[in-house]
Image (cartoon, rainbow, N blue to C red; front, side):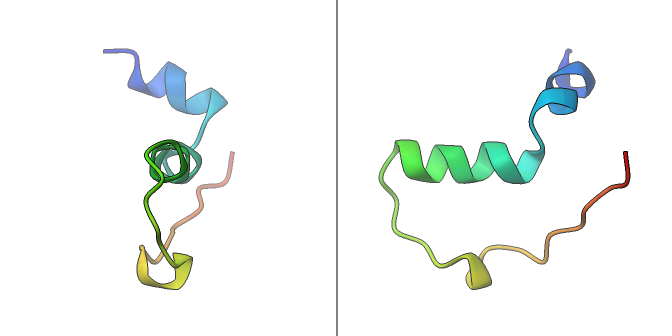
Length: 40
């Protein structure tokens, strides 16, 4: 319910990368997504 407010602080990309690091998942950013950055 508070996703809009939450993502004002952290982008989806930041949050996703934090999860990968938190759970010690190996990854190469070039294989994740084509990130679309929104203008704020």
